[in-house]
Amino acid sequence: MKYLRYALLAVVLLLCVTVALANREPVTLALWPDTVTAFLGFGYALTLPLFVIIGLAVGFGLVLGLVWEWLRERSIRVEAKQNRRELDRIRADQPSTAAPTPAAPATQAGRNAAAREQVLAILESKEG
Image (tube, rainbow, N blue to C red; front, side, top):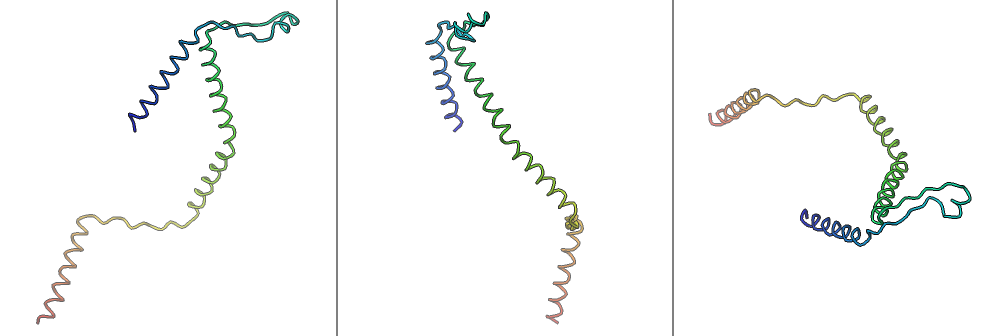
């Protein structure tokens, strides 16, 4: 599965490099159309290769989508935090039942020896 993922990433990278090499021509990106720039008296234009503009647009879209989802899921995170606090409060209010502590090996060995002695005593009483 790991190699399949690397193969898929290699194919995507190869496609991205191919698109970048095919779109190296400089493109002018203007803030306003020429008529609006002439009317306002100012404008801003940037000349970059097309693949850079496409990459920036995709990156901006990814960041915008991540922020959108983070804001959309805020209510879910708030509700989960409230539920966690309530659960902690309920657990703190319940009387704690002391969990049995595991016996030390020496104590268990002593119990095993005592149990063996009882079994032997029962067997001797039946024989005699």
